[in-house]
Image (tube, rainbow, N blue to C red; front, side):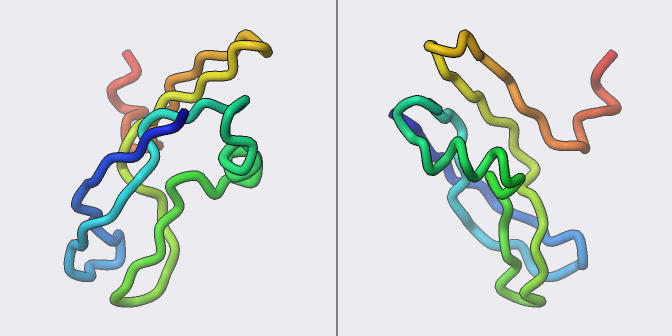
Length: 84
């Protein structure tokens, strides 16, 4: 079972913020369409309702696929400065 959460997304092009749902926990074996979205780099990819440009949500998510022994915590690029 996979879960979503809500957040206030902020377009990097300066448009007004908007409320949206993003994936927070993805069970790859139970949600093959989400596994495919991750492989296509489309997971939590948003489309701004103001300028209609795509951008990634600034929200981490967990990917779990037990048969493949995968448990991954996926963070947005903006978290890179916190890596240390």
